[in-house]
Image (tube, rainbow, N blue to C red; front, top):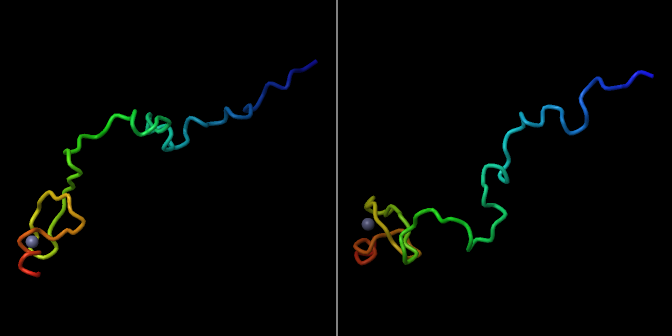
Length: 75
Ligand SMILES: [Zn+2]
């Protein structure tokens, strides 16, 4: 009897062409945060920001984006 082996089988129809989802592009997504390799980040919780008052590009660990000089000047 003829075997119906023509046509794509379920699950094999061009699945490789699908855009990679986050679970593929991030190989560490299934790891707990403490086991993931961290992107290099300065210690002390510093973040890079730009002062909205004077445009200074600087690092801070404070909640505000204003630099110390502008904060002191009340800008
Ligand atoms: Zn400033």
